[in-house]
Image 1 (tube, helix red, strand yellow):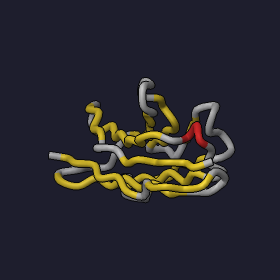
Image 2: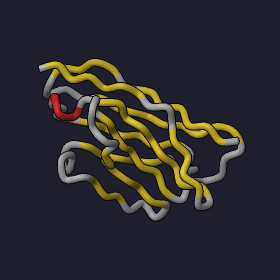
Image 3: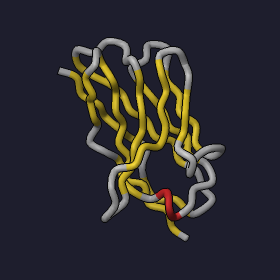
Length: 115
């Protein structure tokens, strides 16, 4: 069984930075793709960024130029570097791994941005 554990969330002032991490544990092979999503209270879950086994990345329009997704060589850990945060970036951030056609989700890590 594969589990994802996220870390790095917390409270930051507007304009600040955070680095989120998501690590897979258990019977895990390299991910085909990894992604980050976020969900603010009362809102639907929103896609933020993805990275594929090739290294190709893409981002939601609201985070382009501010967020960077990366993966380790084994493709079992992903990071999301978030710079120049604003209050609209606040929410619970979830990572998702695509493993052999299955979507595996983490439990989420909260991000709070103070103005």
